[in-house]
Length: 265
Length: 171
Image 1 (tube, each protein chain N blue to C red):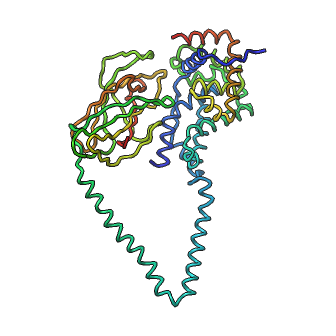
Image 2: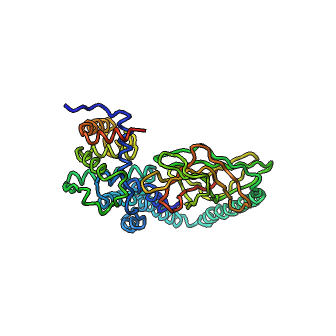
Image 3: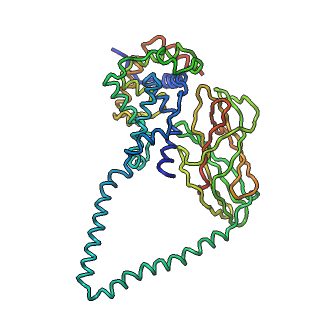
């Protein structure tokens, strides 16, 4: 009989290391455009349950319209009241909403844009989901009055090149990066919008690296960054504590990072 | 973010690992690409419901594994490629370590059943939990444990692999 005991932790670690060791980088990347063009025409626009109910909903609206028309014709004598009753609410509604919506721009314009000198940056603990690492960067308003920030910060980073054992191979230096805006694997992007920060309040954005170590790749450990916020003159420096944020790239290419827009913590 | 953007992000961030897992299953980059592209196409066709379940990568992996297991049942992969067959796909210096290591690993994986091999790749290359592996294979976590134990029972009997595993477990 074969021995069917469960693999030991040592065997599991060794197997994982061996499989990573022998598996090279793919020779070609998968093209999003090719998949969309091949599958696009077959793609349902909505989920099956929504597709099932949509015709029913359309039919219901049509039936309601026909019934309303019949009722209006049947009660022709009282039709002078009905249009007035149905017409007013819509006009009143729009008349009411437009004044109520006008104060909000004036309220937001009353809050000034933050100054770089009054913003304090700090990095939270790095996290990892399925090999994708990310680190939250917090921006706190240290001024005594409220101010606003918005958009995707523009970042420059410093760090060390490291070897496969995680040991630094260079002094801290500026790292060439390419930045993509949008959701990380582990964190959704709130999208660019204005955030009003009361005194002491904090906004947060996330920087992520979706690539892991592999053959033919350089690895860098990002330990510091300088961020500029759109519309604000000046920069905010942030130190990223251990273990830092690792990123990989093919030799000679910039290191790919993803960032979300500033959002509420 | 639009559906296209969300889907593009999934492809951009995850296709590398999916391709590498596909290569460990099929031993051939062209087949691995077919496998991943088929799974991604299916995912895009069902994007509305996939996204609603908030697990697009799990869906891709499930389709990928189902497709590969079907290939194996139909013996489309009856002709097992040798390293020589796809050497053109892999530059010599891209095989980390040396060619012999790769030969030993593939020879070892070929001794396993399709599901045992899938469990080894998903659990130890993709680092999935037993529950996640079970979802990808459409079986119970208990079955994953059984496949894993049986796979290791076979692999322990291969002296060439034993040396590599001991070497790999060194700090």
